[in-house]
Image (cartoon, rainbow, N blue to C red):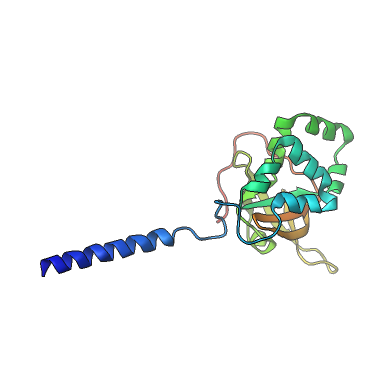
Length: 190
């Protein structure tokens, strides 16, 4: 009788352990693997979008294309060609000429996990992939002719949201973001 109880107890513990392992962290912020489903990767989506060619060139110079091709899940805030055109020619040349600084700036345009526009509308900030620096997020009234606008760091509007990739999501933005100077922030909205 005692042997049957011991076997039943061991079996119950084994089943419980299996359930705990199989149910661990199945949310959308999982960063393991390349993502789910078929379709283009983030690198392919960026390459296919004609108005992101400057951003694509910057990713190549900074050595980040492979990360967006092979790793996942990421949210990418991709400045359009028009956003890069708002920079002075000297500033753009200086940035593109310093691959280490360019890498920092581009990583500041990325966050872990897949955050669609609806997720962003409910946040006040997001932690970037550059040194855990915070990107401020706010939703503003777009006026009579427009829906609400999601804005990053009070300067960059999301102009085309929710471009899906198998390993994340791309949001086109109207300005190039600059990481803040100083020590990294550590508090993020959940």
